[in-house]
Amino acid sequence: METTTVFNKARSADQVVIRPLTADDSSALLAAFEHLSPETRRLRFMSAGARLTMRDAERLTDLDHRQAEALAAIAPETGEIIGVARYFGLLRDPGAAEVAVTVDDDWQGQGIGRRLVTELAERAHANGFERLVAFVDQANQRVTEWLERRGASRSGGDELDSMYTLDIAAPTTLRRAA
Image 1 (cartoon, rainbow, N blue to C red):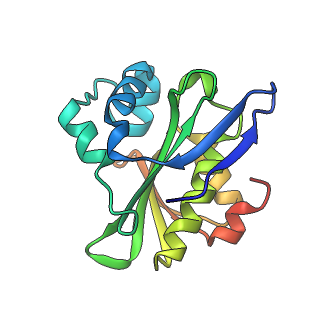
Image 2 (cartoon, rainbow, N blue to C red; image 1 turned 60 degrees about the horizontal axis):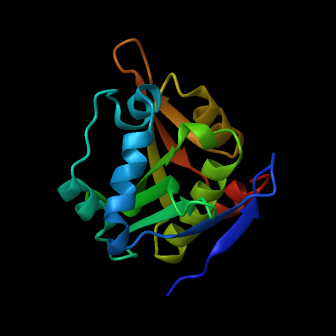
């Protein structure tokens, strides 16, 4: 169905496969969520106490791969999902899609999130989305700074709002130094 991207982790020879999520990934997605630290859950889901049920996992893997897409980073030695990037088209803004990324704590800082976002942005663009929007907690400086270096514009994030809204640049800009 879709192409698969493989790249080497910076600190080892292990390879990570990036591929679209399918309905068969519901259980693996649930297991990946359970492995996230409270801090990673807080930064991604705005709550350290976020929960995911099997029904939620099934809904999150039921994708049309056009209006809604999700890519998974898979550890080849275990077959476990170690990262997910997803977008879904915004009804109130037909040319835009909201994007979100999560990478397992043990795998953060190795470029997996960057690869996921870059490939996801290319798919979104190919499916007709002109821009991506991310809602990022102010505390997530690594993500905010990376996106801004690639041309994302920031709004929000004042003393009353702990979230930034980032309009993400074109896929070719993201690919730079991905």
